[in-house]
Image 1 (cartoon, rainbow, N blue to C red):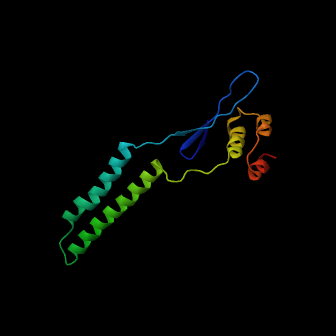
Image 2: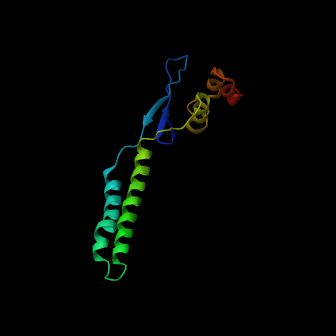
Image 3: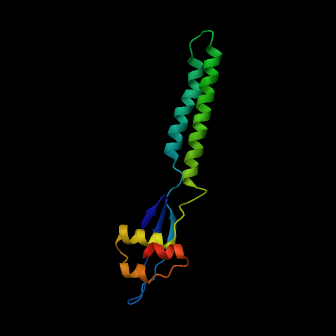
Length: 130
């Protein structure tokens, strides 16, 4: 199938004389424990352990606050970005003709006649295959 972002578009052929194209969205990314644990551990060291070993001085409190705030905000920003990749609110917006054209160019299992036989539903999509 064709990979676009984190989704896969698949097509299949049915019957000896007629071809049917079926487009299926398959989500490929899920939560992985190792990256979350490694990044969380990294920022935990910076935000929890390092503030206790800051050298004594007139700015010790400020340095501790900076370390905790930096670690917590950077970790939160990374976590939200990582979670957004797992479950995007907006996926790729592709017309069916665009998907068929990409399948023709990248996959090779679809013929040019299949693209020309496809009847698009709007003028924009129709001009894409001509």
